[in-house]
Length: 625
Image (cartoon, rainbow, N blue to C red; front, top):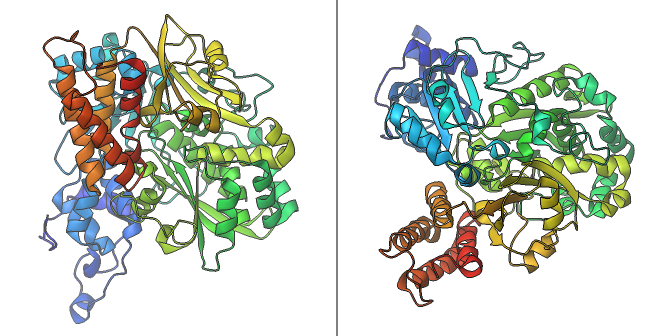
């Protein structure tokens, strides 16, 4: 792709997809028809790069792929160089710049699904559709680990359609590899109140085959002691009235009583730290953003939970979407943000539809927009869909993605609280962190701190996989007792692909407790491994995952993830699998050197943690030794 426009023409369908999002072009200089006025003067369009990803989605959703003509038209509309737009379009796995069928099947092959038999599913799909390619793809984690193995079918059209299959078994492949029905039922109304940018007021049609109620993902559903999950499965997620009847918007009213400074003080006193893995104090982040003299301030909700084995944020968004809307409004009030972006995974069609409905309903009822609840607060939320990139879970990569650039992390400092989205002070929190703010304000900081809740994503060899809520300090054994292990537990992977394997079940599930055990709490992943799982194959999948998901920006990660996978392949393919390995085995030595280099020199957490699980499996489980 060149820096120049090559005068490729979009089809009428592609042009309509872009115009439905952006509106009709104002002149020939922005892709419209030439008029006499255009011949008399040149009009330079203002760059609107932040609409690049939504525009790419619009074409991909309607046609199934993005042609050169469509990309050319998008670039003219947004005043973006074609080469840069091409770099963005090819960055994301859910977008394609090569012609392909309108319907594409994504079969998850990541950790939880691999442990539950995704290989057999892939083998059957391969028999029917051939090797992975345009019709189907082997996918990283789809966030459906409690119902593994999983598959997701995406079909372009008006509207575009999605169908989730979980669990997907070899016996259901005939259905999975068929064609989606023309009309799909949906649990949401097709016409929404208010207007959502880029949706024309419509939610995407979402049908979940063999749909399982959201409460099935929460084995504790109905337990009166639940805090964060108390409404999931008990309250209609589409009903704002039901949400308010169950205590919704109590926290926002309390926030107005306390004032912005009082809200931040409560969050500081509660001791709340980020739930995405970094565990940075939330109150300090909010305070630092609120104090910045530069305006506007932005709020970004990181709902791009792509860590293999993680699905807690998905369950909250599907089962209690208004709680996230309220929590974002509280955060915006405390930090002086008039605009919020909710960046959600492209692989979460049901959560996307429910959040679009919740945002539009809240806006129509005066809970978003100008003068919220008559208190003078102006705040609105724009939902942005990711397009399949694990690295966009990194806070600065999200900024680049929203701004219409490749989702690559930025070097820090400056930190987001100083220069974040669009170069302005920005507060970034994930879904679980934000919804914790509600009980802090409802109960008070001291009461919250006395029984601080934490969500865990339990999958693998357990009887009742799902999202569990425990207070900090509970042990891993207590959590597994709730979930009910099956067979002999060989190890537990804490923290996902970026985490570590442990065998001690009495580890306290706190940030300090897991750190002392040489592991990490991370995003709350608890993947239980029994003797039926091939650990070597699991480690290879972890290595492949990091190789594929590395953005390639820094050498230690770009090269190190490839060298790590190569060494693991060599170790796995030895002629005699029972031959004992020595600590001075050249490939083991190489793995340690490469792992340490990635940990010390990578720009972001992807490269810094890519060696963790492999190292723990070698040292604690004796794999390859």
